Image (cartoon, rainbow, N blue to C red; front, side):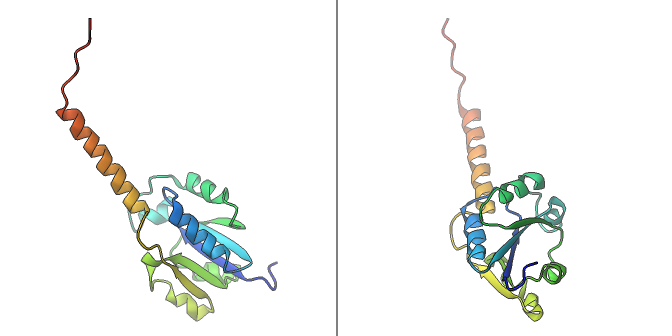
Length: 151
């Protein structure tokens, strides 16, 4: 189906979708002709970290609504060997927080790119900021005196 086309695959949780997610997907888009994006299922994410804040059905719809991906699929495993073989993937892109984890794909003829998130926004930092803001508001509420209602 994709003869003479280069196929790029990128994947992620894409929880609390933010600008670095978009940058990585757009970077992947520019590496080839066909872009396939895998969105990790809730079960997969919970196998290695906390449950996503946004459910899988909503996360995949968000990614599907983007103009960059040609195909969006569920991702059920962190081992990409089968997906690479089935979909004839030429290049794989993942955030640099996974650096080295997918080097094994090079043995299958796949170019592996670790996208540098750098400093700035991440889902973890967003969750931390939300939590800190929420707890700060709770403390303020507890320390404030109720106002009298004018009669």
